[in-house]
Each structure stands twice: as structure tokens, then as C-alpha cells.
Length: 147
Image (tube, rainbow, N blue to C red; front, side):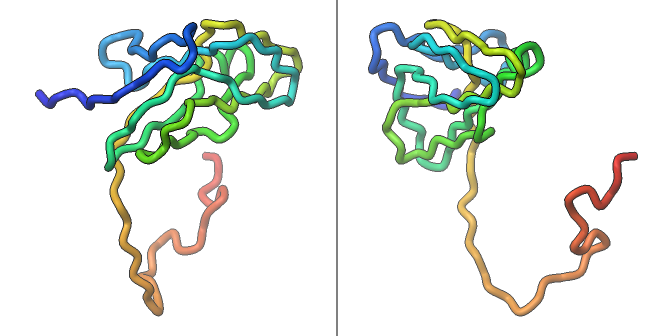
């Protein structure tokens, strides 16, 4: 069995809740709000989590929506997934957006998003005169249809 990824974390607000896995086998840890907000329909805000982390080089942390908030309240992460690079040392903020027609109250201690860690590969680009042909070719943006 592989060793767990070690993430250094620091609370920068006294009421911050450290991220943790809700269940064994979960891919993401929950992120919690440290402030009260009212998110109006169509509005987006930056939600404070009160924590900073050190993502190891060769990894990224992704901020993703919580499925229950999305389904039940229309709340999502505006730049989903939001990427936290290994060099970033600022507060984790969640850009929440309200896609519903009703305002949504975010209270201190509310789960607002989840954080997932991924190993990343560094790309090396090689400029070429042409690329190989494929069956799909230039087809995209719905070119395969819905059924």
C-alpha cells in the first residue's frame, strides 16, 4: 500500500476548520467557510476558508463543487476545478456561484467545496509542421451528437 501524501497546513483564522475526509475512500476533503455570506441568484463571491497549504512540487490541489450543494441549491465553484499550484501560499478561497433563482445563506462552518489532490506531469512542447490524422479530426463541441 502506498504512503499518504503529506500536506502541510496552517490555520490563519481562529475559527477555520481543517479539511478532512468524511468517509474512507473519499477522493476529496471538505472545505469550510469561516464567514457568513448571502449569495444572491447569479452572484459569485470569494468564500474564506481560513487555511493555507503547501502543495508538494509535482502535485496540484483542485477545488471542486460539492454535489449536494449543486443539486439541492444550485451552488457551484465558478472556475471548476480551481487549481492551487505548488508555489501558492495564500489563503484557500472558493469562488462560489449561485445558479439558482433563490438566495443562499452560507454560514460559518458550512461545507462549501471539496479539495482533491492530483499528481501532475510537466509537458514538453515540440513545434511541428503537421499532426497525424484521426477519425475524429476537427470534430468537437457536440459533433458526436447526443445519442
